[in-house]
Length: 123
Image 1 (cartoon, helix red, strand yellow):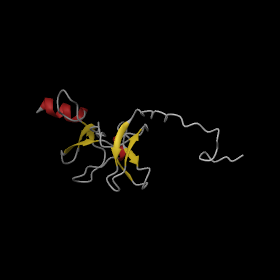
Image 2 (image 1 turned 180 degrees about the horizontal axis):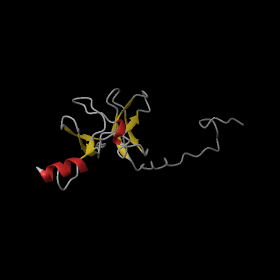
Image 3 (image 1 turned 135 degrees about the vertical axis):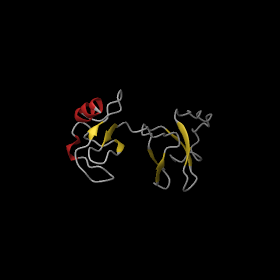
């Protein structure tokens, strides 16, 4: 008995199986132009299954970094600190004068630290 479909007398042609539509996002690789339905969970970096190049997902929007507004005690420069150690500002340095230990600015008064608040109330 021959196992090839074309020569097997018992083989019966059936209807083609319906294509199951995958749920996902249709993406096109910017490098090779390959189009596929992306069903992964990663929403930042996507890898093309054809050329294996990674690119940013088109629907990805980077969130605005949250941070603490701080003020330098030496020069008075203000900036938004978005580093990992927001609670311990001991190791943070001012980007303008390189002084250490800035103080966080309080939202209601706009004045930094307790010493600066006392000076602001006196003056």
